[in-house]
Image (cartoon, rainbow, N blue to C red; front, side, top):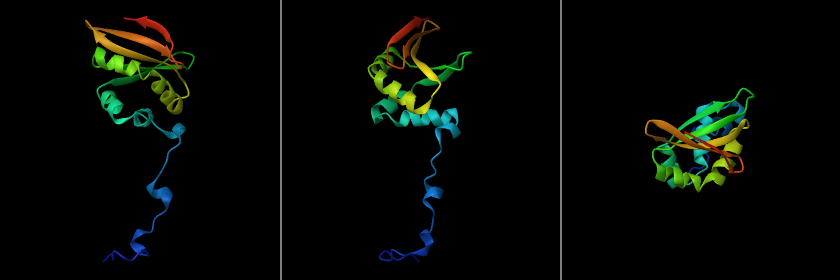
Length: 126
């Protein structure tokens, strides 16, 4: 039985490394990196991101684009205002991603605005 005043209870022997395992980014799967990316946002932004779909498009030269498919224009505009936060978080999770796109589906077509890591608009395509 555990006694509430006994701070030397032997039942709680563990190494910090066993409980708080922290993976290096190089050892994370893409899904784990995406979860890490989302954790850097505040709760309202995370709620918005839960409604989005994500994919990484890799170019032949090894550089990539993180595409964020937003459920509607309102979410896309709110994420646009957070583009600096998006680029900072991309930098902490992926080294090969050079751009990100905010996309919505319009009339069955994917409409995207592509931005640099500095948040500058690169291109618009539908």
